[in-house]
Image 1 (cartoon, rainbow, N blue to C red):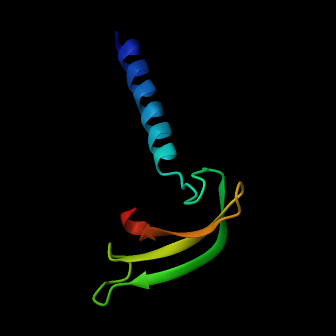
Image 2: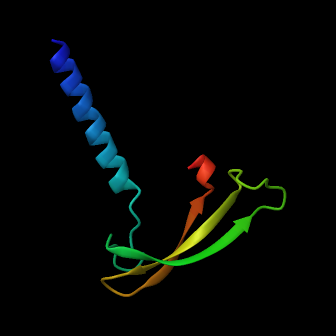
Amino acid sequence: MTILIFSLIAVILVFLTVYFTLKRKIKCHNCFSRDVNMTGEKRYKEDQIAVFGSPNSYHEIEYKCKKCGNVFWEPKEAVIFN
């Protein structure tokens, strides 16, 4: 019985990991392809009264679609609160 419960919990954890990984995958804004690469460019932004690393501080990362060549920016929150 314990092996069955352990197996069920393991399957649920694997499913949730795969689901949330695919859900957070960046899509191209033009063709909706998930085949995108980070270019390495970052823009940092912060609210006037934000403390560094707070939920109000974030940066944008530049991505390029391999399928259509579209270049776009996606916001990403501070790493501490991610």
